[in-house]
Length: 305
Image 1 (cartoon, rainbow, N blue to C red):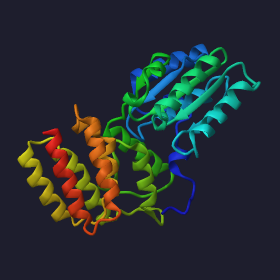
Image 2 (image 1 turned 90 degrees about the vertical axis):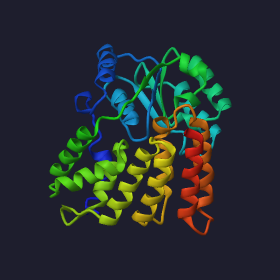
Image 3 (image 1 turned 135 degrees about the vertical axis):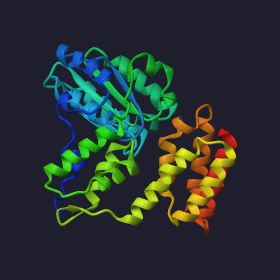
C-alpha cells in the first residue's frame, strides 16, 4: 500500500458540486438548493459507494447550517441514534438551520423509523434531515412522503476510470491503463471500493496489480452477467467459472450480489436477499466454501429464472 496513510477516498471526496462526478439531473436540483440556501428533508437512495454520503456532505458544506453526521449501521443501538439526534436538534446552534445526516437509515427497524418520523415533525421549523439508504423500499411510507426522494445513480465506468486516473496523477503514481481498467471493473459501481482497491495496490509509487486479485474480481463480474442468462447457460457457465478461477474465499461475492440485487433479481428482491444472507452465514462454518457458494447460486437461479 502507498506510504501515505491518508485514505484517498476521503482526501479526494468532492467539496464542490462541479467536482461531483455523474448524476447531472440530480446536480441541477442540488444547485437550486444551494442557490436558495434552504433545504427540504431529503432521502437519497442507491447502491453502496455511489456517492450518496458525498452528496449529503457536499450540501451541508456549502450552505449556512450546523450539522451532525450519524451512521445508523455504526451506532451501538437505536436509543443511541435517537438520543444523538434529539440532543442536536433541541439545542441552540450558531446558524439558523440545523441538518442531520443519517446515513444508512435502512438499518433502522420500522419502529425506529416511526420515531424518526416524529422527530422530523417535532423539529421541522429549524432542522432538516438528509437520509441515505441502499434500499428505499425498506423506508416506511410516512418518511418517504415527508422527503424529496432522489435516486443516486453511479457514474459510468469511463467516468470512474477518469476519476481514478486523476487521483493517481495527483499522487504521482505510475500506472498502466489495463490495470486501471481491471480495478474499475472489479469494484464498479462501488466507487469507494474502486479507490480503496487502487490505493492498496500502490507499491513504491507504482500501481502494481495482484494478478490473483484480478482473476478473482473478474469472476464476480462474470457471475453477475451469467445470472442474467437463461438457466442452463447460467448454471454451466457459473460452474465452469468457479472451477477455472480457483477462488477459495467468497465474502466479496455475497456483498456484490446484495449490492446488485435490483439488477438481476427484479421481482424477487426479498427472496434473493434472504438466500444470499443464508449462505453468507453458513460460509463461516462449512468445510467447502466453493460448494456452499455454488449451492447458493443454484438456489438463486431457481428463484429468478
